[in-house]
Image 1 (cartoon, one colour):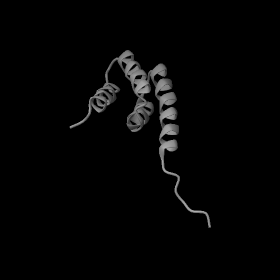
Image 2: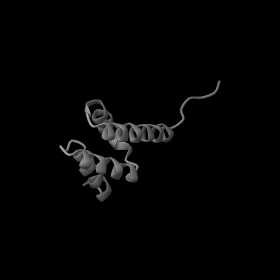
Image 3: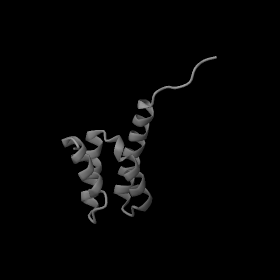
Image 4: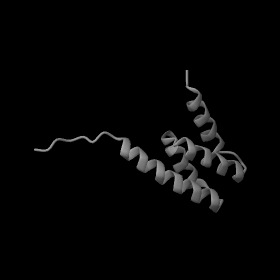
Length: 81
């Protein structure tokens, strides 16, 4: 069973497909507050299809922020030889 946070994140990811640009902007803002790295793919899709410049820019900015956060969370692999 998903946690409450996971359900909230899923709710906002689903709202990225809402007809209203204001709703999409609000969800982007909420996903930013939640630092929802799992929303990266949905934001990338939104960025590619978005026609509203405000939503497109907000998706781009948050997508970059989440990408960098995801990269920082990856384990540093490799061994020095």
